[in-house]
Each structure stands twice: as C-alpha cells, then as structure tokens.
Image (cartoon, rainbow, N blue to C red):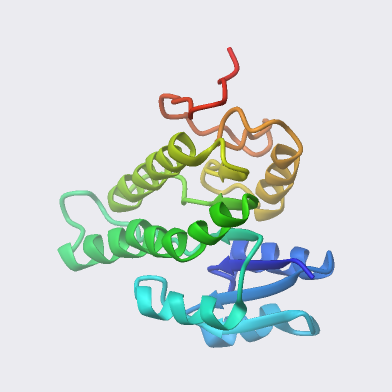
Length: 218
C-alpha cells in the first residue's frame, strides 16, 4: 500500500487532503498539534493514522517517520498566518510564524526527501499560505517556503521526485487547491508551481530556475 504523510491534517486543506488520500486507498499518516481535530479528520477512515506532532520539533517529525516507514507522497500544509499590522505584530508571534512555516517545512523535507531520492520516486507537495492583508509575517514565510521549494526543485528535480508548490490566493476553497494539485501531477515536471484556474486565484510566481536535466517551458 502507498503511504502518504499529511501535515496540518486537523483542519482545512490538510484535513481534506488526508481524507481524499484515505478514500483513494492510501495509507495516510495524518499529523497536527490539534489532537481533537485529527480525531475528526480520521473518523471512519481505518487506513488513516493520526499522530500528534509539532513540525517545529525535528525530533518529533523524525519519530513519526520512524513509525510510518517510507512515504511516497508528502502533503505539507502545517502553516499559520496570524493577522496583525507589520509594525505592530508581537515579535514572538512573528518568530513563531517563521518557525512553524519555514523551519517546519525544512524539518518535514529533511525527514522525507532523502528516502524519496534514494528510491528514485516520490511526490513532495508543499502548500504555503498565500499572503493577504495584515499578515506580514505570514507573507514573508509564504515567500520563503515558495523559494525553498524552488531550490529543492532546482537541486533535485531530475532525480525522480516530483515537487509541487501550491500557493493559492487567500480564501481559495481547499477542494479547488487539491483539484489543481491533482491536475498538475498529471503534467510533465517543468515547473514546481501549481497553476490555479480563475476560481482558484493565481499567486505570482517567483523567478523560475531549471534543474539539471530538465527544461522550463517558454
């Protein structure tokens, strides 16, 4: 059975991603800090395994992977974007946002990507929150996560692992984002960004870089 790791699975996009994968007969490891939310996500899904985990703790992430074994798909949606004006947001809130979104992404990638590269296959899907008004820290984190995904693609995009960055406009329904991800996985990996249709909203892409052995579309 194929195994998927879904972070931020207690609500929103992460919860829907976990439920869709479980319904498609994946063995799903669903993680979040919200145990009650995870229980709701996993309800009536015998092939979903809920694990309370804080992605800012690399040891906790490694422990989850030690229990789950190799994963073939990662859907990383454990992101936060607390709203506050840029010059008024408490520093500890800014720091927590960057730690959760940026370092959390790094921890999840470092725990899962080496195994994918060793096996020569896998799907790394990263879903940063899109920027919106009064979320300066969230916008900074979102841009950093998108740039990090591009760096991963540039370095490892020709080694059998598919990279996707799903950065939809604020307020986009999770089902539309997941539909766009599914469509993008069916196309050649010439660009890590998931294109959104008019309903999903389009977030500006960062400058493209081409990994060795691939060519970016013109």
